[in-house]
Image 1 (tube, rainbow, N blue to C red):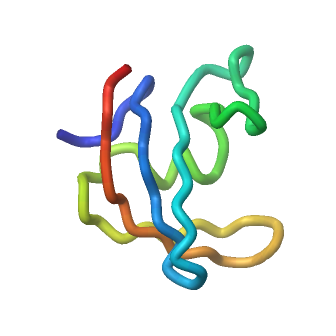
Image 2: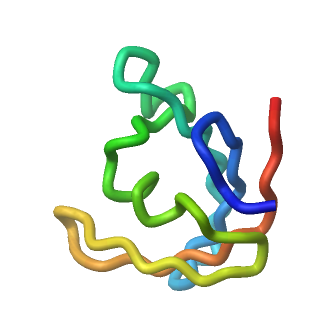
Length: 75
């Protein structure tokens, strides 16, 4: 199953081993505090089309971050 709009994705930061859970939503619903990121965000764009176990690198304003996709869910 690849990541598409509406997916809830569990990521692990490869530097800190910190787990993060994000749902990919439309612009109006986006709210980082509640774990919802916009489909147009750099992270969501990097995740679209990827599968569980894939490595993703995202260039953020704070520098490049590497994540591993641990889980993809549809809620």
